Length: 216
Image (cartoon, rainbow, N blue to C red; front, top):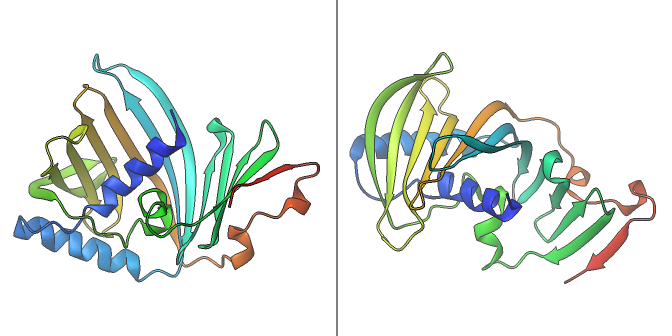
């Protein structure tokens, strides 16, 4: 499973929160955004699972992401990748080959792939409906379905589950037209941790003999 698919899925989940539809759903999504934007930093541990059309699990990956302003750091050990971004440059470090690719942060192209925008990018073009409450992992969650207005999209629906007491995302599912289902489950979330700016910048001195590919 490519990292770009994970990025796109993360943004699809949170970036489509403000389409003008169901009043109850809008109330929940507004509160979700308000709460998460109040944090100085956010750290999330998650699992990302693909189920094929037969219903059998084909792949699950564990990971974590840290957010601070426009900076982020994405850790995907199963994929052998660590991504650092300080809002100006992005370093994609490949652990097996000990090489890092450096790219600049383009304001237009990077927005769709930047986890730092998880709780601030508000894409248009979605209808949404409040489904009701559901118990997920012992937590009462508010369930909302989001539908793309553009029917040419590769997915038909996103189901978003929000913790009723904390207004944090518990789980989200994207249903693709090919029958595959992608599930993002939040395992742990910490906020307002002391993360220095250096944490989001790749330091080659810490990686002996690293091969640097500057693509800016």
